[in-house]
Image 1: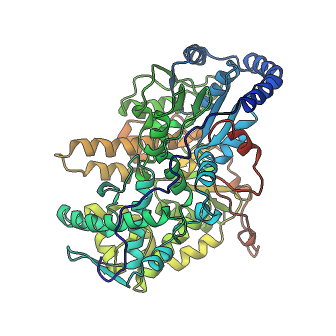
Image 2: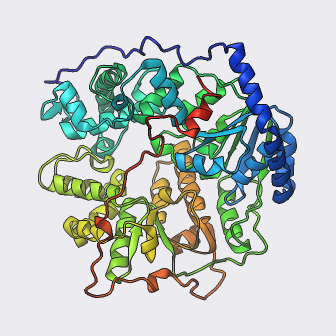
Image 3: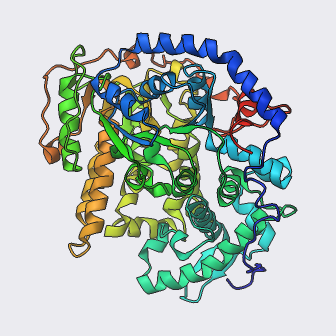
Amino acid sequence: MRGSAVDQGSPKLPDSGAALQWSPRAAAVQKNRKANRESTIDVDVVMRDQVLASLKPIKEQQRALELFLKDEGLRIDAYAGTGKTTTLQLLAASSPKRALYLAFNRSIASAAQGRFPARVVCATSHSIAFRGVKRAFAYPEWKLTGSLSPNLIIEAFRMPEAISFANGLTLPRLSYTAVLLASVKRFLQSSDEQPGIRHIPRQGALTGLSDDGFGQFAAQCLTHVTAVWSGMCRKNDGLPLGHDGYLKLWALSKPHAQTDYVMVDEAQDLNPVLLNVLKGLDCPIVYVGDPYQQIYEWRGAVNAMEAVSTRHRVLLSQSFRFGPEIAAAATIVLRRLGARSPLRAWPDVVSHVGRVRPDVILARSNAGVMGNVLQCLERNMRCAVLGGTRELKRLLLDVQRIKQGAAASVPELVGFGTWKDVMAFSQQPEGDYLRSLVSLVQEHGEDRMLSALDRCEDQEEAAGILCSTAHRAKGREWNYVRLDSDFESGFLRAARVPAYNEDHARSSFEAEARLLYMAMTRARLAVHLPRDIQKRFGLRNTTAEILGASRAEEIQVRPGEQNDSHHQSREVVSPYHSPRAADSKEMAALKRIFR
């Protein structure tokens, strides 16, 4: 990078990098712990008996219990709606041993704590890492919880307005810092000890570079990514670690757990950094997840269910969410993904594949969500965007910036100099992911779409219908679900992969099929599938009726009515950890697990 002051030295861990290892316990502390455990044993025995009596495990869950009690590690493949957490609750209630239940986010961990015996600590990996890194390295709080932003990088390295590269490429500094941030994130979520070329993303206008041209760019970019990581590690440097940063430091210290076993929920979405930590623990691990719901490869996750090695394995195929029609349709998709066993329906539920008045419309892309929001508002329906409108607004604001000659920072638009460039690139095979966005902007204009997003409800409860990407909907369920037609675009893109790259073509198809399977199994009573998707997989509607009494018909914006819900302020809380002056109950419990 020319014209910028960047330290290209190799990053180093803080001097106390070994402080996250286990240290010997004093005999008195061990004695007190033993006494505390004995004082709760009666309560746990009662809870165990109640849980075992109330759950009435089916045959698959009973088999999982038998294998779990061997204490040799266990992989539980659990299809959609098969009661993963309930099965883990059954396992925990059957054993008097201490355990750590590792959840994907804080809300899941908090909800799980009330369902497990007191001897099971429910936590996220980030909450564990936060406590360990803060104590070991004495970082100030802002260093751990702050967000690494483009402006912080620009200020730290005194970047010029534009950065030129050896291959002739020139990028505005805001676009380049977006690439640096994406590269750092990929490194933080990997199992690698140092940043590498493979962490540099080929996104936005960079997808138009030749392989040699991108290779030259990535080699230069790597020196700057290394410098950013070095600054993040330095205690007095102005670049914060952030949540993924302190998790990476904790993982690099190779922590050990003082617990009898670990249960990992949603294990299919483990990224390599966490997977590596778990592989290093010297206690049995119970991995539970659905390998066919792994949908986060674009942000560094691997299909961890295929990467783990356990002595025992069991399948949960009995869904308690939907009936035979949805199960049969989902099984067809699963078969295309290589699954041998069918997804079995809950016989007491009547469900259908057909037209619906939806509770939620799921789209594959942000552009699809935006299109659905516009349609709902045009029909005077009160709608909300699952997860909020911030991400959509950021995309549209970057469209504005490009039209004004400024740089964009969202991955889809990084590196484009003008809106004309975006439009031209969207017509090329590698740029077809931009076509929906370009069409919406050309038809409606970004200003109108931003205004529409301001009219969306802040709270789901106030809306008659929800609009969301499929990724945002993971872990949720509704009675009536409609899938947007943009799901077909992903399969069309996968089909255009050159024939000589057979492995990439197959992996692209499988990624799209996993997303489809996850989305269609959000429905309890009926799912509306796009016609092209039905044709592609040989699926048919099971009823000619239009099902569902959507709240969208009941909750509409009446003419002249003011919708002020979007002006209400809401507290923003980290999904990982919110530090308090004193340890929470969760933090206190973790002292029994990690040091």
